[in-house]
Length: 304
Image (cartoon, rainbow, N blue to C red; front, top):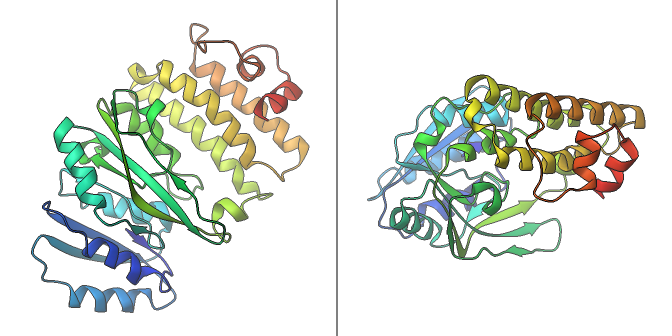
């Protein structure tokens, strides 16, 4: 759990983990990332009061600010469990979340298990409910958020989140999902996600750094082709075509000239990484705009 200036929400988040009823041992690693409010003080007090728990332990790491990815990477360096999950400090776990996720993981020897989630906060709440399902196709089953899941910890060998970038969660898809062979989704809601109108998703519109979404996608594909070329497969191709729509949406508010340049940039790396044997099961205007003759207007129309 990375924590930065989370004094308003951190206790509720911690309580939701500490109070989980489960027969699995739980180790909570908190990375206090150089907060400028009272987060560190609250955390030290909380840990001292909950240090002795039968099947749960808390490890508090305090560091100078390294950003969200830097905090997560510090946490990944201290993994000791068979499975790992990510929790953001302004969110909280649903009752029974760990038991539901882990019992399914053990039953089917899953690499990743994902549950449903419910949003709350600045806007009207909503729920995403998953079917009970076991699959071998992560890209067809999972939502893109890092939370609401348990992962086998060995999926994170030689993995780090890209630091200094926005939309760093994309790395999980290209570097972790690709290694997962057995996936499960379960019906219960396991996570409560706070909608924050002051977060990056809501405030990034019109900012040049929103182009990080395009840059990260390209670099992840280059890394895959260089280090694990066998993972450049049909699933990655189809996801990358869909990812181009997300990348476009994140550049809303930038000038038309910049958005056109981003489109050309996406075309370039898609056609460099994927040879002509890669095609969607059924032709689409989106794929045509990215793989055929350059047509920015067609691309925009296809995205919408």
